[in-house]
Length: 264
Image (tube, rainbow, N blue to C red; front, top):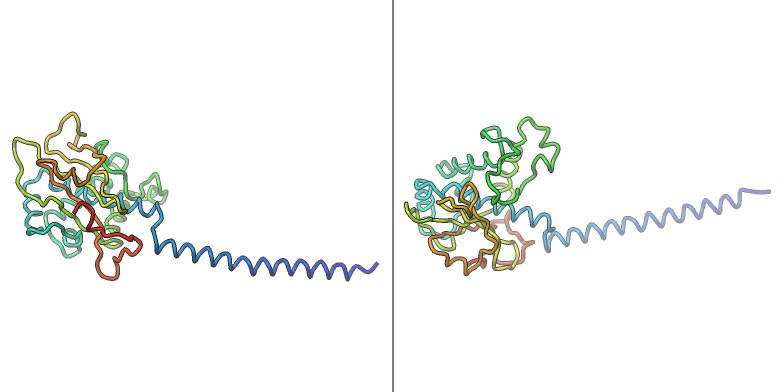
């Protein structure tokens, strides 16, 4: 029996199928990549969105910790604002800035990140139950960080680069700001962040100058809704961390909204 002819036919069929697969797969891959790029331009992934919002929450949270019970820091912030309602993080923490606020912000961030410069361990850096969720990867999320002799240093550096290199951020004071602190009454500051959507509210953290049973050990209380009505709270200032559109590096074209419309 002559087996050559059937074998040639089978070989031809196999090669034809293989060529069809090769022709189809690149097209599918291209469509997939094209769709992914298009999605990225229209709207960030939920994970990217959540991480950025957490970062904004931490920027306002740490900034509030710096000034809440420190008259000198409050006066410095008041002088920096000079009547403005917003100030950029670059102006507060940029490489050419030499200020008490920047020094204290770094100290607070070192404590929360558990860096080698602080006296706290990385797994015991959140002093109360009211602090925001971590905005950056920790030992539990990244084994490479855990393997570092000082994992807190990597956490610190990652966060520092994110707020000064990867993003453009500003602090917004919708109620203005006063450096005065009463020695009798509670003078609170609520830290919050832009929700990165069109909602007119977000959660936040009320930092009190007086510790009560309703607060954690740092005098902080979680607030579920910070909105326009909340701004009427007496003796309470509000600090909002929000994206700042500036230049070609921070257009935030993926966010189809006006960041300035939140708590105007």
